[in-house]
Length: 329
Ligand code: GA4
Image 1 (spheres, rainbow, N blue to C red):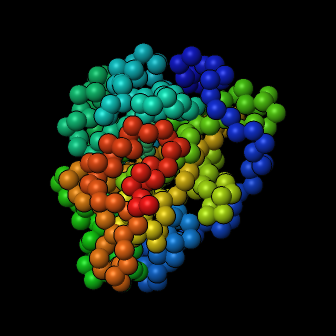
Image 2 (cartoon, protein in one colour):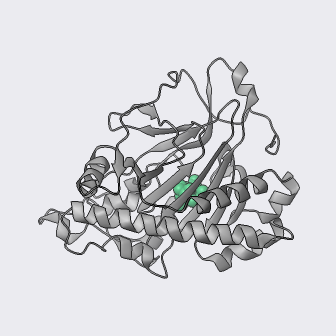
């Protein structure tokens, strides 16, 4: 079993009186092979900022290869994993999330989509065979980016935007500032004795980018916050990909879509492994409502570039409302 460094559960956050985990059955499921998927994506983004997709034709071996490489990595002794740290901007992180004091019952690898940047750190942690991990990562990342682009193009169609590449070209740009993350939530046996309290694996937040694509193993833990403020548990589904609307997409649609607040709770007996692609624009990109969507309506947000937004988001706490500073009053 993997032990996180200093395995004391005291410094973690708990959610008291969390309702028993009944799974929410209303998560929209979009079949990408169906002709009406474009309109259903728009509806899901408006209602939840969250949905799952099936039937994209993602090569199964890319998933299993990367998952097994990730399991191998997380099973290594802590001292070896730490050779790939700290996660700044890419590398191994343990318990501590971001630079502003957030902690969770999680260890992770944070990777940039520029493979050169990852290489040095990973080579030292993967010892004699970094090549296998690197290939698995490259294959998975290029397929997941393509899938994110296809979803964004269907979204543009559903929004009746003439240029269907308006979102996807930002992710396809060579300078796209996208991120990839492998999260491992080890089981937390102490939880069984904690009177039904739930410990935070990854605290509540919205993703700053345009779109996030998450795939996890069959362990529960992911929760999303509905528009009415209620938290619901997402049933795990290892054969689907989960899609999150990010803050940048919220701005580009002038609030018609809202980024989804989500979190992960620790599990007492099973480990959870998730792989998430965060599709972001180039740093110099101006993030603003699309004129073709606006029908003359005024922007709800001040002008900013992705660089400015990211800089501000990265000095905030996980749970902060990061878009708050950029709203017009
Ligand atoms: C949330 C989405 C991605 O995981 C991430 C996270 C980033 C980090 O882990 O360094 C942040 C978080 C995320 C937003 C607020 C800041 C920055 C941790 C944190 C407290 C990689 C990202 O892009 O933003």
